[in-house]
Length: 169
Image 1 (cartoon, helix red, strand yellow):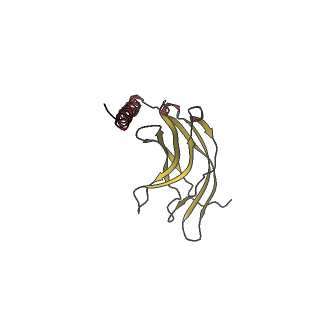
Image 2 (cartoon, rainbow, N blue to C red):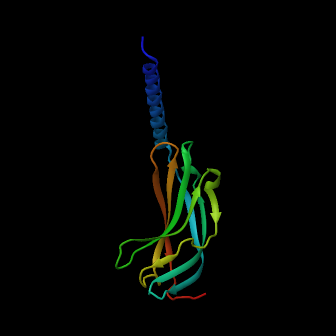
C-alpha cells in the first residue's frame, strides 16, 4: 500500500494538472470573441497653446470622449486599461505619441462612457513643432484577463489640427 504522503502528492499533482488545463481552455475561449469597440473624440477647446521658456510647445485642451468598449468584456475579463494619445510626425521623429488621458474600466457597465476632461497629462513637444500640426487621436486599450494572456489594440481617429498661432489664456 502507498503511504499518505504519496497519495497526497498524487492528488495534488492531479488537481494542479486539471486546474492548468481548465485555465488553458478558459484563455482559449477568448480567441472566439470578436470585439467591435467604437469611439469618437472631439476637441472642445484649446485652453492654452504656448511656447515654454525652454522653447518647447505646450497645449492644454478640453476633450469630448465618447466610447463603447463593452464588446471587449467577456466572462474572463478582469479590467480594461484605456488611454487616449495624440500621434503626429515631425522632421526629427517619424512618430511622436503623447498620452493625454487614461482610465481603468473594471466592469462592462462602465465600459460605455462619455466624458469631457481636460488633458490629464501635458501635451508638450520638444521643439516648436506643434503650430498648425495635423495629428491623430488614438484610443488604445489593454484587456487584462483573469487568466491567460493580455491583449492590446487601438482605434485611430484622424483629422485633428492645432492652431497656427500661440494663444495665452
